[in-house]
Image (cartoon, rainbow, N blue to C red; front, side, top):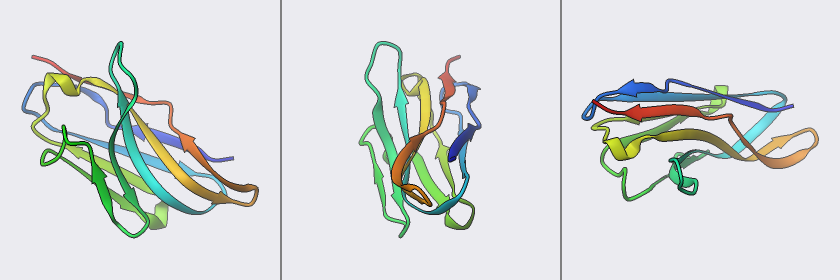
Length: 120
């Protein structure tokens, strides 16, 4: 069974920084893409950033230049460094792992989410 566990959320003032981490555990052979999505109250879940096993990244326009995604393939962990945070970044942030290869097949998984609140 595969589990994703996020950490690093919290309350930060505008202009501040946070670093989110997500570790995937279980009988995992490989993970193709890991990423972060977010959902603000009353809004749909949206992509923040993704990174594939080769290191190629993709960012939402709203976070380019402020957020940096990285991953450590050996321990199936993905990070999101968030700088220059704005109140509009407030949301629940969800970790996603896609193309997760295990003994039973290949599928995607979601973490339970971690709250990020940007407020003075």
